[in-house]
Amino acid sequence: MNTLTMAMPKGRIFKEAVLLLRKAGYNLPDQFEDSRKLIIDVPNEKLRFILAKPMDVPTYVEHGVADVGVAGKDVLLEEKRDVHEVLDLKISACHMAVAGLPGYQRGELNPKVATKYPNLASQYFKEQGEQVEIIKLNGSIELAPIMNLAKRIVDIVSTGQTLKDNGLVELERMESITSRFIVNAASYRIKSGEIKTMINCLKVALGEDA
Image 1 (cartoon, rainbow, N blue to C red):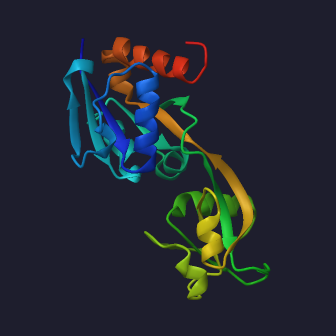
Image 2 (tube, helix red, strand yellow):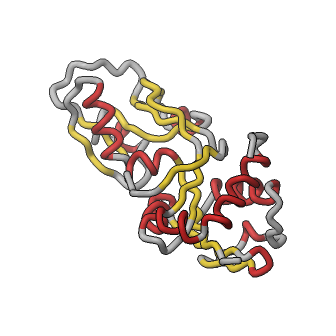
C-alpha cells in the first residue's frame, strides 16, 4: 500500500478535517491537531500530512508534492489551480460577502474594494456590471473602510462578529463556502486504490453513499 501525502491548511479547517478523518476510520494520534510540526507522518495509516497556509494547499496538490488535500472553496475559486475537486467535506462553512460601513451607496466612479481575493472579487464585480479598483491586502481587511482606503471589502464571513466589532455590515452575499477534498491528477491514476478508499471512507463519515 502506497503512502498518501495530504496537504492540509493550518488552523480551524485542519482541526475540523482531523475530526472528520477520525470519523472516517483513520487512527490519528492523540493531540495530533495540536502539533506544531509542518510535516507529520502517521506510519500506521500510511499517511503523511503537510501543514501549509490555506492559499498554498492547492499549489502543493497541483504540483504533486501532495497527492490529496483539503482546501476551502474560496481558495479554489481564487487560485484556479489544476486539481480535481472530488468531494464537498461540508466543514468550515462560511460565505463570501461584500461588506462596508452602514449606509453605503453606490455611485462613486471606479470605487475601491479591498480584499485578500483579487481574482474572485474582480470576477464578481465584472458579473455585476460594476467597474471597481481592487486593492489587495493580506490581513485585517476590516481596516480598509475604517481608514478610508476603500469603501467596501470582499472577505469570508462566518458569524459576522468581526464585521460587527469593527462597525461594518454585510452589503451583499456572494457565495457559500465549505472545504473540499482535492486530488492531484497524476496521483489519481498512480494511487487510485488508496485515494478511492479515502474518498469512500469520507463519504460514509458524511452520511453519503460510498
